[in-house]
Amino acid sequence: MRVAVVGSGFAGSLLARILAVQGHDVALLERGTHPRFAIGESSTPLANLTLERLARRYGLDDCYDLAAHGRWVARFPELRRGLKRGFTFYRHHAGRPFSSNGHRPERLLVAASPNDHVADNHWLRADVDHHFVRAAMAAGVEYRDRVEVTSAMLDDMRVDFVVDASGPGGFMARRLGIPSALHRMHTNAGLLFSHFDGVRLMSEVVPGLPAGPYPDDWAAVHHVIDEGWMYSLRFDHGVTSAGFLLKHRVPGTPDAVWQHLLGRYPTIGVLFGNAKPLMPLAYKARIQHRLTRAAGAGWAMLPHAYAFVDPLFSTGIAWSLRAIERLALCFENRGPSAQDLTRYDALLGAEADQIDALVAGSYIAMARFDLFAAHTMIYFAAVSFAECRQRLVQRDAETNAWSGFLGVGDPQLGGLPRAALRRLRHARTPAGRKEFVEWVTRSIAPRNVCGFANHAAHNLYPVDLDLLVERHAVLGLSRDSLITALPALRGGGWTA
Ligand SMILES: Cc1cc2nc3c(=O)[nH]c(=O)nc-3n(C[C@H](O)[C@H](O)[C@H](O)COP(=O)(O)OP(=O)(O)OC[C@H]3O[C@@H](n4cnc5c(N)ncnc54)[C@H](O)[C@@H]3O)c2cc1C
Figure 1: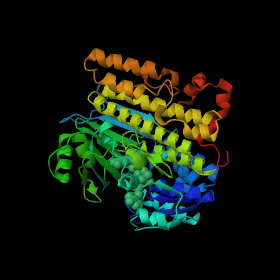
Figure 2 (figure 1 turned 180 degrees about the vertical axis):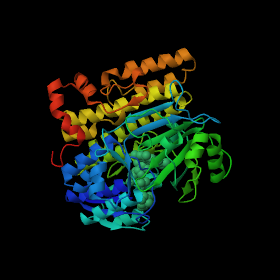
Figure 3 (figure 1 turned 90 degrees about the horizontal axis):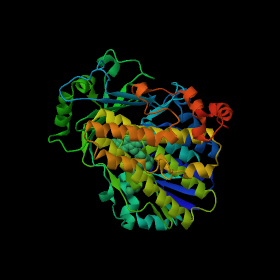
Figure 4 (figure 1 turned 45 degrees about the horizontal axis):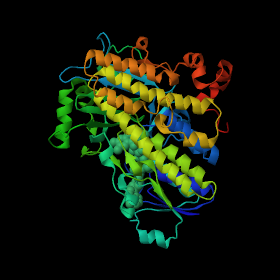
């Protein structure tokens, strides 16, 4: 087939390359040029799992190595990245330094990997996206940059299928006049962001933090504040990507708002006090976008062209890779059928709703750290169950690729984000909050392979293989078969 992929972020370039490997005739069309700055940097275990599967199925050995920190550093030291051992959360209060020595510090650490070697990465997108474009070209993709893609151009190229990988660029939405569905999204936040030099470590600024399952700062760090939250992603070469997600516009220039927030939250102020932005601070009002359709006859969008909710929980890369896997399987035969595209469209719609419900619930829960920490357990239970099931239980490629993201389609987990959102709106009293925490604990139990929502853990969750073995039945495995399958959790081998 003759396929045009519009947009050469990592997702468009990777899909273009896979289609070329399959023998399709592929053009990759980019409005800008590489290397270029891009946001959306923090990868996750599910993202790496999909990257490894794509690597094995289509012979992309670089993707296999990019799926784990140790392999990445050994093979591609020139591609800048950051070690990500897990998800770190702190609750800050205006005018008060973060305190490590309270009865229960408002701190939550969830390990995503047992050691640095197999850990996830923050992707410095300028380097990584450039790598993916070059790899696509090496695989035979015809790449054109600095092009303004028009309908006439696609007609001239006689393409059979168009993949819209233009992200918020919204290529297909404009071409086909696809209406926005933003009104159905609950999440609503603006973003103030940059990359910085000289951000200090939480472990230096707050002495006496109890030891966690990994060093706090080598993670996707989330600073929860009254106005929303801040992400802070540290790269190995000393640069940090950071931004505030703000529920309401704070008046003032981006620099003034930044200074205001650093002044209001003393510990964040110390962390970023001497940090230098490497490009001007930028503010974007509502960053969410959402369309009414993701696919139709002769075209499909990748997730970031279709919808974006929020950086909370780092869902973007993993979701994009899962969608690439689905489309790539459809192209193994004669290209996506009408039935495939209907299925793809419906699943992306349900997944966008799921991410939105989960994130919108988190924003409500942020008011109280006990609620917030409990609510995050829905995310962690869903992704850890999916990861263990996909890695440890033998399943075919179709089943893995088309399984719903974040519990979509799972009778136990599927309805939880929406139910949580409803409940959180009413959990205002201490009794209501306690009831919510208990409800989360009960609701995730049938999928809770990692022992989340455990009061005795004091919000510190390591990777605990003994516990996983104990919970073998949750995965439908015998104890012995789970133990035999355990090496697959570390990524298995390149040809496994
Ligand atoms: C603030 C923020 C933080 C995020 N943080 C995370 C995170 O921590 N973890 C995570 O997993 N995800 C995160 N995401 C989501 C992540 O950014 C996306 O999932 C990811 O960028 C998707 O990659 P992509 O290749 O599909 O699209 P993009 O990276 O958006 O690339 C689109 C490409 O298309 C090109 N283009 C646009 N319009 C046209 C056109 N008309 N013609 C030709 N080319 C065009 C653009 O120049 C660009 O190169 C974040 C997103 C935001 C906004």
